[in-house]
Amino acid sequence: MSQVSSQTSGSKTVAETAFEARFSPRLVAAETYHDPNDVILFMHIPKTAGMSVGKALQAAFDIFHPVSWENTNQSFRNKTRKALYRRSDEANPCRQVLMGHFAWSDVMYWRHQELPLKCATIIRDPLARFVSNYRYNTSDKHPQHKTFAARFPTLESVCPRAAL
Image (tube, rainbow, N blue to C red; front, side, top):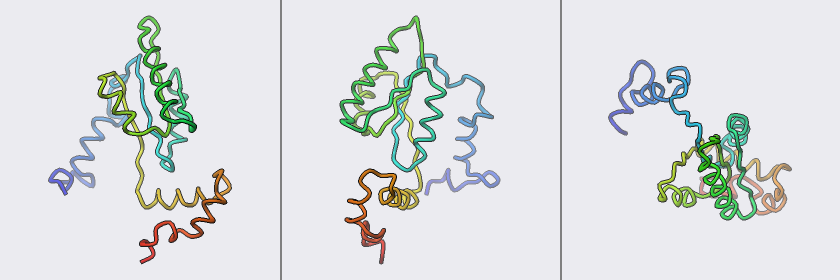
């Protein structure tokens, strides 16, 4: 454990206090991180509140580019090219967000091109996410829930060592 995270300021660690001072909406001056021509890549990790955040992003940004489930790599490339082309129109700035289940390698491709893209995601406690994902995959909400449930009838059958 790092020295920073073990030091506390009241009930918060020094790292938590510094993070809040830099990013909390109530502590950061208005428009500090606002660029009228932003392109944000929001990597949606299933079962981490991504759909709720996606709806908020869709309402907050001028253009929302959803990356499709089918052929994710090609869809991601097409949407990022479209967003970057749109960003080049300096006379008509707009804030854009791309959201989907694209891979980190896709994000890194664009980062290596030194393009002005910002990246974001939400992470969740791994165990809570694992259980939530299992429940979702076995529910009627998931298109292939019957196949999944037949293969993994119990949570323990997905991860047999967890039963120990």
